[in-house]
Image (tube, rainbow, N blue to C red; front, side, top):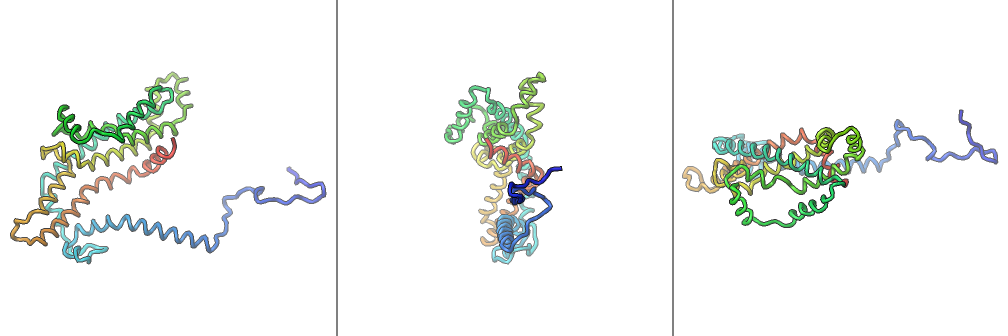
Amino acid sequence: MAQATVSPTGVAPKTSSDDIPWNPKVTQQRTFGDWVVDIVIWVILALVVLAVLYPIWFVIIASFSDQTLVASGKVTLWPLGFNVKGYEMVFSDDRVWQGYLNTIIYSVVGTALNVAVTIPAAFALSRREFAPRRIIMFFFTFTMFFAGGMIPNYLLFRSLGLLDSMWVFILPSAVNVFNLIVARSFFESSIPEELHEAAQLDGESYYGFFFKIVIPLSAAIMAVIMLYYFVQHWNDFGTGLVYIQDTHKQPLQNVLRDILLANSTQTGNSSMSAGELQLFADQIKYGIILISTIPLLILYPFLQKYFNKGVMVGAVKG
């Protein structure tokens, strides 16, 4: 048994608070000030959440409400004068279903190509033994600040035969430099060099190390990159507006825009006044917002845990 230390004077020394082992079961008594700070923090968080969620909730209830009541400010928490005329108008147009199919194809194929190019490139640029990695990274970063512009891009895509083709949505955006930097930072900070040394001792090549060790450990950053790219393709509006003339190849965003503009300028309808046409266009607008965002709202919860982990590890370190 350990004996207590006695000072030369015969008096036991005083024990400081640092010498007492920490016991997680013993909680410090909270003061009134602590409770006040907690309440203020929770109130601020509640207000922030309300400010974020209420606009989404308002769009939902407004899309199912009588637009006269919406315009008069009577619709606040629940839908009033329930009707689905806006959704009926949107979904009765066959272009919406074709636009949905086109956008899904562009987003899925584009995201698959993006991940297949970005992840190996980021891994190669993260290896310190790869001598020209800094020069190559400089050329990648240079494109973030300087670009050719719309007219040179149009001429280039026309010479490559990409106009009115699904590949104009996919090939020009095969690599996003920001996502490349995030993935490279993840590999530099989260994949220990000891793993590569152990793989070399086992006779693994770079390809074996990448596919058997790095990829299984990179689920978090891959989920983040996939979500970034998928949202980028899903919301791609400018590409279809400039480079696609065939209406059957238009993505959903451009189709919904055309429907909204057509109903906003439909002044020749003798059965409806200008004010009624505007209210009807507003209801279509609310419905279009939900139609275009629901797939992303459904997808995000399944990737949230990977997103929170991957984006912090890949962006804060390195």
